[in-house]
Each structure stands twice: as C-alpha cells, then as structure tokens.
Length: 237
Ligand code: AMP
Ligand code: ZN
Image 1: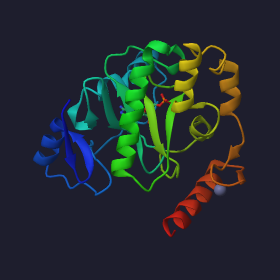
Image 2 (image 1 turned 90 degrees about the horizontal axis):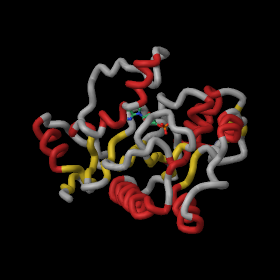
Image 3 (image 1 turned 60 degrees about the horizontal axis):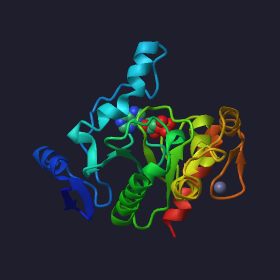
C-alpha cells in the first residue's frame, strides 16, 4: 500500500507524479485527478447495444487510468465520479472482485466492504471534514463493476438532471453501507432485504422530496433551485 498526502488529502503516488508533471493546482479540500478538457461523452448516451455494453464497463476502464485515481490500495481504488451528482462525488471500487451489483454480496465480502467503508470515511474526514456525505450502493446500478458511492448531501450539480438521478440517491434505492454490512453479518446474504425489480421501479418514480426539509418539488428545475437555496444558506452557517 502506498499513499501520499497532498493538501491534507491522500492521493496515490502515481497520480501525484502525474499531477505534479501537469503542474495542476489542486484546491485545498478537493483531491483532483487530471480530467479530459473536452469531455463530450454524455452519461449513458448510447442506444446501440454494443456501445451500451462498452459504456456499462466504463468503470473497469476508468480505474486502470492513473489520471483518474485519487487513492489506491492493494484491494481498492477511489476515483472521482465523472458525472458528479453533488459538489463532491467519489466512487470506491474494489480491484479484484468481479461483482456487478450489491445484490450478489455475501458474508465473504464483509471484510472488503469494511475496508471500502474505512477508505470512504477516511477520505471524507481528511478532505471534507465539514461536509455531510451519504455512503452506499445503488440497488440497480447502471454501470458494471461494483462501486460504492460517496456523495455529498447538497446534491448541487449540473449533472443531476432527472427524477431517476434524484430518487436513485434519495429513496430506498440507495442502500446505506453500514446497514447493508449489518444485514450480511446477521444473515450471510441479502435475501429478503434487497429490493425487488418492482420495488426499484416504484422507488425511482417516487415524488421529488427534498432531503433536507419537507418540501416536495413538482419538477426537477424547482427541486434544483430549492437545493441551491439550502446550499447557500448552509454555507453562511
Ligand atoms: P450507478 O448508477 O450506481 O451505476 O452509478 C454509476 C456512476 O458512475 C454514476 O454516478 C456515473 O456518473 C459514474 N460514471 C459513469 N462513467 C464513469 C467513468 N468513466 N468514470 C467515472 N465515473 C463514471
Ligand atoms: Zn428543502
């Protein structure tokens, strides 16, 4: 395991070297891999099946590119989400495990999940000590290769566009990691706990409820405006 500390945040030695080579200025609280300037690809944009398959495997590709890596150990990689749904959004990705969703997790994965949790909480503590985060899995991920979301709860981002985006993080579709680990510790698997496809469909169609007050928005633009107002008043506190 080899980490380097940079501006109070850990980055891999490889990423650090590349960042230095590029003379990139990194914000005090935001570990930042080099990003493509003209990133024209749209999230989940292809209808063609072959392209869709290729798209779905994007995370396996992303973790092999040192430029994306915020932190790396023998078992786990942390990258920034390429289409962040909040001010800060990371993905913690196990290197060796060939699972595509949390549905397949069993007792045998508990140690790995605890390591992922430790890495996620460490990143938050080191780099965003004053920011609230959610840490968990999407019940029905759009991308292959198991990935843990570490996302700030402001949900202020131009990439947050659809009802599905919102509800995927703010309904029972989002499986909090500590609860998932305790279910595995109790039973050894997630049978009976994991939402069915029908449940998931309903969760993703739920009304747009604010995660910080009782407001219910009629449209995504009004929810986004409302979330911006929360963010602005939170920043004054
Ligand atoms: P999920 O719905 O749980 O499968 O989430 C997949 C996440 O991966 C989304 O938040 C996307 O924004 C993100 N994503 C998609 N492609 C990439 C990529 N190439 N590199 C980093 N993040 C990605
Ligand atoms: Zn609110």
